[in-house]
Structure formats: C-alpha cells, structure tokens
Length: 358
Picture 1 (cartoon, rainbow, N blue to C red):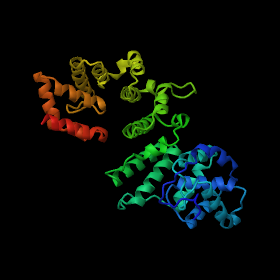
Picture 2 (cartoon, rainbow, N blue to C red):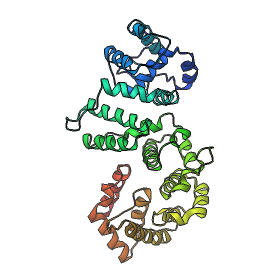
Picture 3 (tube, rainbow, N blue to C red):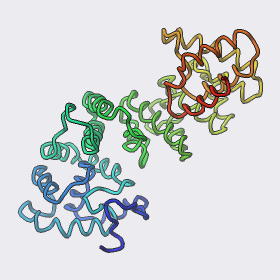
Picture 4 (cartoon, one colour):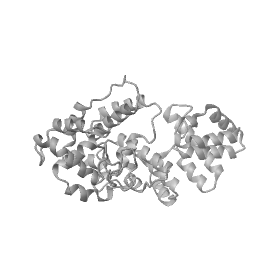
C-alpha cells in the first residue's frame, strides 16, 4: 500500500482540510461527485455499493453512466492519493462536512441522499443496537440536517438516543456542526437546533480544552447578513456565551454583556458566579439562593438545579457557609443527588464535593 494511502483503521497523520479548496477545484466533475457521494453515505462501504448509489443518483458529469464501472477505479485511486478518501470509501474526518456542504451548494445533496437511502435504507428502530445501526442513525441525522427537514431530524435524533442509551461522546451534532465550523451555515438552521449544536460543541470543546473562539464570536456577533446575533434572540444563547466567557476568564467581555442584558438572565446563577470571582462568597450565596428559587419557580420544579459550572460554585458556597439555611439546603441537594443526574461534564466534580460533605 502506498505511504500516502492510510489503512481504514489507521489515523491519518496529515489533514487535507487546509488545502481542500485548492484540491477540490482541480478535481474533475466525476471525482467531485464521487467525493460528495461518499460524504453523504458517511459509513464504510464497498465498491459495489458505491456504484449502485452512483447509478441511482443520475447526476451528469464528464463521465457517462456507461463508463462508471471503468472510471471508478482510477477515480478512487486519485482521491485516496490526495488523502480525501480512505480504503473503505469514507471521506477524511476533517473534510467530510465541508464536502457535504459543497454538495448542498452545488444542489446535489438531496439527489445524492435519495439515492443513498434507496440503496442503504434506514435501519428500523426495532433492530438491535450495534455499530452499523448507530452509524446509519447518524447518517440519517446528517441528511435531515442538511436537507433542513426538522421533523426527520427530531425523529432520527430520538432513534439515535433510543438505540444508544449510553450514547458515545461526543454527541453526533458536535462532529456535524463543529468540524470546519461555519457561522454562515449555522445561521441557516432553526434556533432550537442551533442551540443544541452550540451547547454540545461548547460542552465537548471545553471538556477537551479545544478552541471555541469562533463559536463565541458567532453567539455574540452573528454573521454579516444584518440578522440579530443569537445572543439577542434568546436568553439561552446569551447564557451559553456568558458562562463560556466566565470559564475562559474573559471577565470584562462577560461583564459588558451582563451590564447590558443581565435582566434576561435572572435565575441562571451568573451573577452569583461573578460574585465568587470577586471573592465575595457571602454575596454569591445570597444571589445563588435567590436565583435557585427563581429557577424552580420558572420550571415549576422544586428539585431544579443549576446545570452549568455555576452549580459547582453554588455548592462550594454552601459548604463554606455556617448558616442553618445553607446547611439545610446543602443536605437536601446532597440527599436528592440532583447534580449527579445532570451534565456529565461536572458529575465527577460533584461527586468529590459530596465526598467532602460526608
């Protein structure tokens, strides 16, 4: 095997993403189509399956349908040589979403998706959960997202959750939307899907200490098309932005947003977080307790608890306080174990704090 053609199960050490536009523009139309098809299929396949999908999609290129079988071998060899496909006809992870978006831009995506689903149909939810079923669920999720079919997106997301109760990390939307993040493409999705994507991306990237600057800039400033930035469209987006800024130590930027829009974030614990950073634990505890009461009233849930790092800081403030009210609330939170049922990102932290409490 040539050195620049990695085996299917080997990591690819050189990423083509930086040179992708230049390489892609030089590809002949048939090679572009094959690459786009591989990005839609998303899972490892054999040559026979790839050809079946090609025949079904009926998109004209510089190669006639009669020549597909003869031209596919040199085409695949060239794409592998350029490090765009692996040995099982899968796109390199760094470019798979860029290629899919290119298929949308060239108005090929829906035609390709229809052909792929005809040859490789969805796996019924009644089938047992295994790696191939999970991959197919993610493929269907991607197709729905790129096709702007929100009904299908929700259904395939439910299928994924049901088939993978202990869903692997990261959430599939992290790879779909987070790889080669594009603010202009993100802006085409409904707000609730944008929130899911950005929430999962930030949670994943913060947990792995990956860069999030472009995501935060999108939340605060949006795109250049004149539409309101996400943080001004719903408090949930603003919470994502401010909490991330506080975690990064960008206090002045967070303070500026809170000063201008803090009234929209009542009950979310951010003012208490800010008080902790100023070193005033007593004020922080007072704010946290008031916010927790507001949060429970809004959600009509007497056991509701903060879902982000503000919850960790609140419990630290409770541990430090000697007041009977703090002791009672601390004991209730410990007994209910509500924080342990929330975000996996802070579950181990809470367990350590609970061990201290014992």
